[in-house]
Amino acid sequence: MAADRVTLTVTDPDGEREVALSSPNKVVWPPAEGDTGDGITKAEFAEYAQQVAEPFLAANGNRPVSLERFRDGIQGEQFFSKNPPKGTPDFVDAVMCTYNSGRRHPQIVLNRPSAIVWAVQMNTVVFHPWASLADNTDNPVELRIDLDPQPGTGVEQAIPAAHELRNVLREAGLEPFIKTSGNRGLHVFCPIVPEWEFLTVRHAVIAAGRELERRMPERVTTSWWKEERGEKIFVDFNQANRDRTMAGAYSPRAKPGAPVSTPLHWDEVDDVDPRRFTIRTIPQRLADIGDPWAELQKDPGRIDTLLEWWERDVQNGLGEMPFPPEFPKMPGEPPRVQPSKKVAANWNPDGTPVED
Image (cartoon, rainbow, N blue to C red; front, side):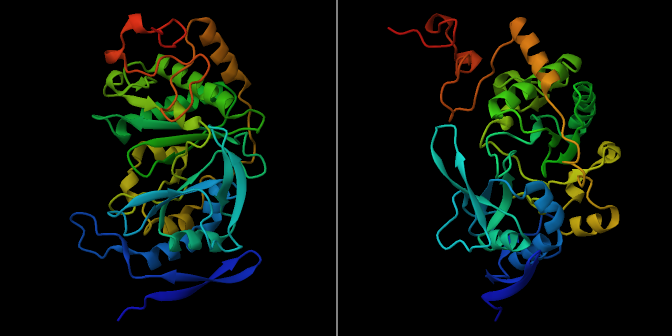
């Protein structure tokens, strides 16, 4: 009978640690449709976590992270962990975070390989890091842009949008890096100095998105309401908010085949097939070409030009954009009602409802 529990010896920078792994033979990712091989077990995932620990921590460590957990593999119940759960070992760090509601509580921080393996033991599948570091959780060190294909589009349509977005961001004085989302989209990150809080960085993202939309109006949209997007690539500006996250670099996704959100060199983008990047292929890819994001934080830039574009657009009548539904009503925000259901007589010009 297969062992119900094993002990892994994990090499951390300060020495070796033993991490218990229960149910090592539990299948986390069943075989994909048409795949005659075996599914990916918890033990194989823990091995992957150790193999990619260095680039994973470079991209996701030393920052608050939310763990997307699945008790019975990707086909089972899904839930998120932010607070360190009871019994969290002392080699898993935490930092106090303030959320959009004003509420504060500690959030998990992963700083060593053993902590990643512990997260695997806790049935984590997807790792969602913040854009800010643990020593300053309020000011992002990355400007992040999610190019999200809408129904009828896919990564093939996201590729030209990513190239033009690179041009936009370089014109604004930033150096973009790119990765697959682990699904159909692409993520573009720019390292920035941590001088601006999340709402200001969000305005910079909106400015970049609007400029991209002006250049590619038939292919790109910044429309928050799905009914207005059409078959285009949506620039999801609200992913720049505090506590709104994307799957981290080298994190797998809860999708058939165990795809991984994978950093790319820009000369790989045109021929990219995200399905090739999986838990079983990424370790060899790293051995062959290294980490395309190895110098991500080497030379952080500034968002001054994007903020100038934001102010220009505001002066030209393009103001605040809608926030996610869980956010408090924000200053200058338009009505949170989809356009097809909006009755103009029920709303004031400032976006507040008309009171009886």
